[in-house]
Amino acid sequence: MSQAISKETTPATARNNARFSPLQRALHWTMAVCILAMLFIGVGMVSTVRPDYLTLVSIHKPLGIVILALGLVRLAVRIMRGAPPLPADMPQPMKLAAHLSHLAFYALMIALPLLGYGMLSAADYPVIVFGVHLPSLLPHSDALHTLLWNAHRFLALCFFALIVVHLAAALFHALVRRDGVFHAMAPWR
Amino acid sequence: MPDRPDVRASNVRSLIVITAVVIVLVAAFAYTAGWLSPGRLTPSKIVDSLAPPGGPALGFRRNHAIGTCFTGSFESNGAGAALSRAQLFAAGAYPVTGRFNLATADRATPDYMARVRGLSLRIALPDRSEWRTAMIDVPFFPVATPEAFYALQQALASKDDPDAIKNFAGAHPAFGAFAKWAGSAPWTASYADDRYNSLNSFIFTNAHGQEHAVRWSFVPEAQPTDVSANQLKQRGAKFLDDDIARRVQAAPQRWTMLVTVANPGDSTADPSKAWPDDRHTVNAGTLVVKAIEPEPDGACRDLNFDPTVLPAGMRVSDDPFPAARSAAYSVSFNRRTAEAKAYPRNVAQGAQP
Image 1 (cartoon, rainbow over the protein chains, first blue to last red):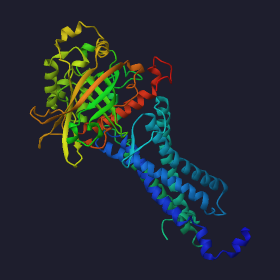
Image 2 (image 1 turned 90 degrees about the vertical axis):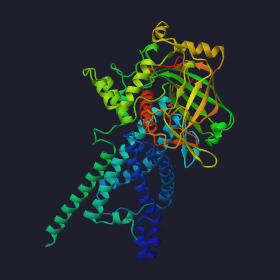
Image 3 (image 1 turned 45 degrees about the vertical axis):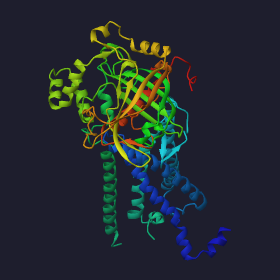
Image 4 (image 1 turned 60 degrees about the vertical axis):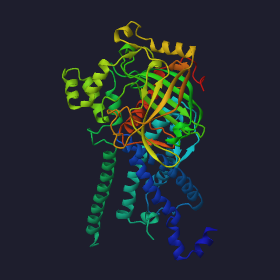
């Protein structure tokens, strides 16, 4: 079956299959900006008492919901469309690391907004996003709030660390290995 | 292979670029988080500065650590709708969760020593929005900025410098006025006798989109009986909670909500400056306190009376305090909820709603 398909594959579709779809790339780069902004806003807001605090919090909450929605769309697209294969000459540990990091990215971009939303619910804060009062996810509970708050903060820092490693790996592929892995997700063309 | 050294050199350049990108990104993150700026006034620093010499009372609010819960209602008369479109001001009665409290971080403070008392409210509205406010019974705030508030806590804590407070007062004239008030204003013998003021300014927007800078006060219907500091001392260390419980059991206690509208030019950014007495005020309704709940089992215990939880039609002004309070209250809330075991409820866990 795959043999039959590959026989019919034109050079153009072969090149396309070596890359993420335009929708996947658009989602990746949009979310890259959103998530990086989100992490900076998060650590920035909890470290200031200036009026910026309220501005940053008022961006952090709706942006979290946007990231959650985009993350779910992206997960669906990924399941349906898949990902281009990694280069055959990539060492096995690197391939494993790539696969695990993708898993971690999906888990974090969906879990972190839910943890934040759940943490606010458990603290009995009203959650208002884009003027809409969102329902409370969880009952009012000190223990739940503490658990979710700790998880939200710890995983957010992990997320940033993962992004740093991901960026370094992407640049390594683009500049050193020049193996097409970066090109597969490149924002252009 | 003549190009081999070129490739190697190019790879080295690439690795340097990658390292530089990583360093810049991590440094920008660390800077944003304040890890490179020890001088930045963070909410944690403010909360730390409030701790009494023996350390904070675990599981309790980091300031206003003594208090008692109540439930009741806010009976809006509809007059506030001229100022704000918040449902709070549509005529009707809305459920209230509240807390009377003392402005001290030290749980050992006797009632007669706590110069400043507070009233916090959470009013739930039918459109599922809510209003939270935390007020105190002083006519103006002791300091003009959150930075000055922090400096004041540091001055109060510096035991080895006898001139710390004097120096602080010299540099912050608002504090002198407060000290004068604290030394001369009469005391009352009950939470029910106190007038509680927002001090901070907020902006109200009405249904026509008109904006007004306002402050508000909850004025007691009880006739306040002034007592001297010495008379108060004779009541014992802890009398306020019993007093308010007794009064509320006998009859609901009421406060009138007065909204004061700023004149053009009145300072909204500085809560240490009271507005003149002749400002237009609107009687917006009545707070009715119907039942006292001891704090260990009260609904107020695990609520954060964050003064920036506002319904549509109310928002913060250029007053820097609500943002600073929101940031610091959040830290206090996160700490005390993590220490909930240190402040057990009287009833079994899970028994309350």
